[in-house]
Every structure is written in structure tokens, then in C-alpha cells.
Length: 388
Image (tube, rainbow, N blue to C red):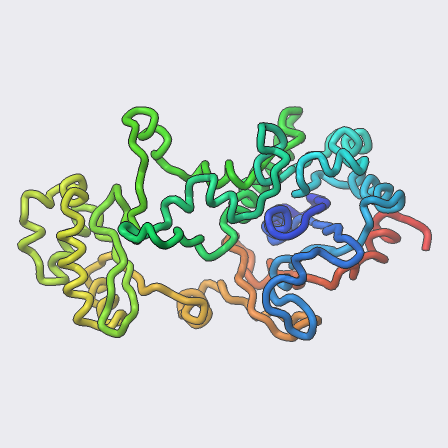
């Protein structure tokens, strides 16, 4: 049995953040009922399609029951209230005020079920001067401080790139999942705080800004983009190899630094008093990066990686998804799962990131994302007991 078996959750989510939250909870065993509009979650139209169905949604909607409802109709509102009565929690990511306008705000839902935990995910939060502004994940990256850091120094003519995935939505979803489980835990122990949870994309990204806010408050420092380097640790960077590939190397502890210098034939730098501490190495990071790059340029990435691994220096080639899909470590740990999807055929899923004692990762993917409304009959007539 999975750890969240028995936890009942209603998802009034669309696109990414709320559905990502409930996917994590469903992977851990929660019963998630995803409420979609009659035409299905608009997200079903995103990304590659096969047999007329979204490939991404196979993962995004996995382990969830799907029902379709028009939330603006009397029947839709009645059924959402009925679902709320039997649920432990509800997750939504509409713009602030929308559920209240259609008669499904927290006051209404908690009148049906006083113990209901409601996690609300939005762009800017449920209050504040920006609450009513529209937002998607890219806005969370931009305003939360992340996009400022993804630029390459000396390339101000190019816009700083996004990180490549919907990191703002995913972070907000992860925080919502943690807060939701925490609120349910507290509720079972008589703690009545935290029944309505307010998560947002901007705050979720902002929370990852490490020491930047205290640095600014104390010293007036504004951390600047460092490209592939880490400004607080050296040498840590990504280096070009002879075959046109890249090697990420993290040699930033004193002992690892010495091993790294030995592997590249630069013990002179290991013995240099300027490089004896991390602070000294950060001050001379450009010199160290040039020495390491001069070595990596002489070897294909796989050979350079093997040489550094033999010296116990943390390193990795930059993987693309094909590398991930075939890597023996990924396969040994069950991170790549083959799933039979009735809508798509056999499809690869990333396994849940949780490793649970006694649980096969394959058993955590109980079914892929279903067609919109596939579970209407089961949910409305069997779970809610409505007459057919």
C-alpha cells in the first residue's frame, strides 16, 4: 500500500501547477479526481500528439480519475460540492476570485465540509496589488529573480534564456503538495490552522534565491549572472570537449580540488597558496576554468568524464533525454518506465522521484492519463451514489 492511500483529493486544475501537485500526490497513492471542462483540460492540446492525444498528458494525468463538468452550471456546482464533501483536500489554480464568482469559493466548499483543506495556486497570490494580473510560468521565473541569473555574462544583447521546463509551475505544485499534506497532518491532530493554502508562482521561485536577499540587505549586493559557473564555489563550471560536447565538473572542496588538479596535470595550481581555500579559488576562478578547459578540449567528453571519475571528481556530461532514457543507472533504479497507454500505445514515463522501501517504482504508475471524462460514470454514480 502506498503512503497516501485513502487520501481523497479533488483537482480543479488546468495547465500545469495544480495538476503537477496532484500528480505527485497521486503517485504516492492518493485518490485524485480531476475535474475538467466538457472539452477537457486545455493542456491536452499542448506538446506532441499521437493518435489525436497528448503525449505529455499521459504523464501529467496519470493515476487520476477524470470527470468532466461545467463549473458554471448548476449541475456542475452541485457535483463539485458533493465531491468536496467526501474529500480531504481540493487543489485549484484559477485566477484569484474566479471560484468565488461562480459560487465555489472556500467559504462555500468548507460549509459543505468544514475539514476540507484547499490549496490555491495562482500567479501572484490571493492578495497583494498584483493578485489580479494574469501569469504563466515564464512570469514566475522573470519576477521571482531566476531569469536574471540565467544569462551568460558579456551577452547582454541576448535575452536570458528560460531554464527549459515549466519550473515555476512545478515548484509551486511541489510546495502545494507539501503544504497540503502538512495541513492534513495537522488537521488530524486538532490543528485548525492552514485550511486554506495560498501558493503562487512568483513566491515559489523567489524562495530559491539562496543567500541573495540577505546579501542585498546587509551589503547592497545584487548577484549577477555567472553563466554555467557557481559564484560561491570554484572550480565549478561546464567545459568544452574535443567532440563538441560539454562536461560539467564540480571540484569545489579542498580535497576534490587537489584530485582534479592531479587528474589534469596541474598540481602546480593545487600547490599555489592562492588556491588553498574556496574563497581564493573563487577569486581566481577564471584562471582555474582556463586550465581545466585547456585539458577537456583535448579529449572527447566520455573520456574526460572517465578520467575524472577515476580520480573521484564529481562530473557529468550534459545529458539529453535520449541519454537519460538509455543510461544504465537510470534503468537500474527504474527511473524510466514502459507504460501501456490505451490512448497512445506503449509510452515511456519518468518514474516518481520517490524511492519507497518495499515498493517497486513500476507499481506507483497505476495507469496513464485517461481520456477526458473517462470516469464520469464511476465517480458520479458509484462514488457519489447518484442514480443512473
